[in-house]
Image (cartoon, rainbow, N blue to C red; front, side, top):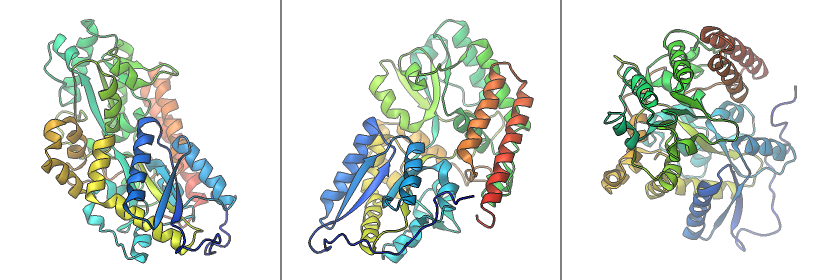
Length: 437
């Protein structure tokens, strides 16, 4: 089978376009998947860097969704027209690492005399993007799910706030529905496999897959068809069956069902802050992810994306990339990005700086995700997920769990089938990438 990115011909070739670095600034392309307000923030961020010095120019180009960016990068790489930097989501980690097309961020920065201190980054970010202590990609837009809720609806139902545990929250949601406070007490997000299953397992310290959720090798196997994870899906089905939880219809954006006031709660990425602030015309608040009664909750895990450096460019281009990454790692840049977008600060220094500014006193819901990510020391079950064929597997899991929600399969059978399909995809990936991490 042809390697995913194809063979790299002339990886070290110098592409000197006839313009010397002395005569003009070195330009690099940065392909990303941000659109709308977030795309505008990317443009603003890049402008800040470009205006801060005269040697390098970053050209940010939106290329659609994460999948579209990845597919476009593969095509461009095979045609030897790849950008210098590409944004890819956390699910594509193994695809990028095993492609043979990238230069690790730690190696790049060390080579350019701008070494990165990995210890400055928060633990869930390091565990996701580092191998053997080296960052493979530059952490960029990291997020984690939290619970947004309509305070007016909770008060109308006789509650001050959502319960911290699922055992408290489930009857509250049922009561909101039964009392007719809203059309639905909770809307199910489109990425519920991440927010309701993966993060549920991390927070409750439950294994999702063997080998520390794939961190220790490609020969991992899924085990989410056992114990409390089965109970979690059964709980979700109960809420859907009763009408307390609503599955957004095709073409409907789940967060809009919350911001319109139609649904009382949503578990969504902290990056949803911008949408909630812009559209919600009611008294709203947020809190951390619910967990099982009797459990001391662990950290949640990140979503979002990182920036990857592609091979096949000139030394001057790599100097430019390193300068841009150095700018991104600065505490003031991190604080601005966090406050402008709702993504979490990925360094402890940035979090502490934002806190010292009094930012969280004025915006307390922006701190929830950071505290949740930094809660305790990550366990083997809350380091993150390193899964091959991740996008394909995610589709299979969603299909099977949806079949349970619709009553086409019992929950246990649906999860057994999801595990079986997922493990088949894992074996295919393992065979294709034999000998790799």
